[in-house]
Length: 212
Image 1: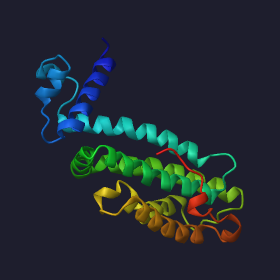
Image 2: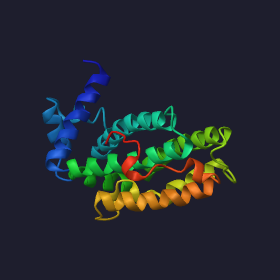
Image 3: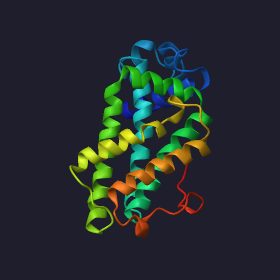
């Protein structure tokens, strides 16, 4: 078995353990046992449990990032609609993920606390998508960004941070969070799009649905 295949096997085994027993109650020895290897051999691939958790999060996030890039260039959608699709997708994906697997919240909290550079890497990748979206929308006459695109993208992230892994920040229901995000998004669009009456996002009940 190749090193990559072994690494994937470890990640899958740990993911099952974390989901069933929780991150805190899972040991490296248990993960090694699930993979039919010694703890010493496991440490050849991952220095510690947190590194495995980060690998799980990275794999999940890279798939999500690919999907977000597609949303940012969806044919037949104007700039405000594409931005709306991206932000609502982020909210719904993470909300449903934590509803389906509550123990994933524990892992998310540990990673955000112990590996802040991971969150910074995620946000940097998403800012690139937001910048590209603004540039394209400006060429089409939909957005008129005032100032540095990177800074605007960072401010959009700051304004919508509550809607990323929302269970980290509140106990609100998804409909309540969607209503709040809709209000925040309207303020963002108002700042970016002087022709908002022409390009305004559709009402929420009619909006383009994305996969959860």
